[in-house]
Length: 220
Image (cartoon, rainbow, N blue to C red; front, side):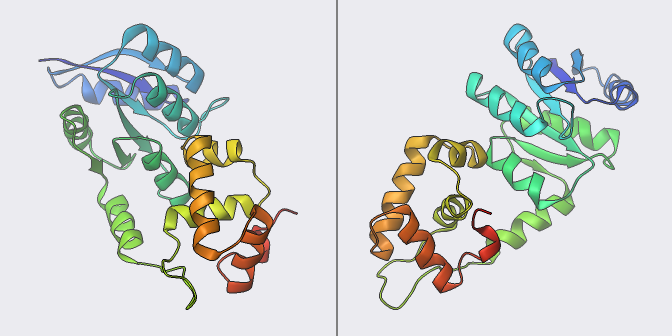
């Protein structure tokens, strides 16, 4: 079976090099290339590739925005991030937005080909450095809880609260975290109930007093 691949990268030389590497394998076919996120979303609608190999930084729509848009339109389409960046600011938002894997551009052609095959099979593929970061983050259990609380806030609830502290609306929080406005509102209701407050400002004030949210998180 041939896996149909869409390459998305704003550097032509990178696309050409990636194409040449992947065309060595008879089970992989590059059906199209794109240098912009907007075009990648359109090509996914038109061509229905099996796997999208996606860069992060591009003019216009970023790889993160394109990943969210593609995932919204094609929930089962596979997206493999191929990036030069190993920064947490990119890794976790992209994985949270539905990317099926994250490889660095230092990877070999053979490993990239194997990664494409793996995400096509429904597996999650992570560069060893990225895997270390993921394990490191999720092995550090942080409990946001006071002695008066029967249940602490989860990491997701704290993520919502941090964005609220920056003055973001429910819609904006949802777009940043890759969740719906209704889900944001549900998290806020849970937060209010757990810490015993009635509104957003009280929740932020409580979190600042506890040291869970720094003053730099508050809207300037």
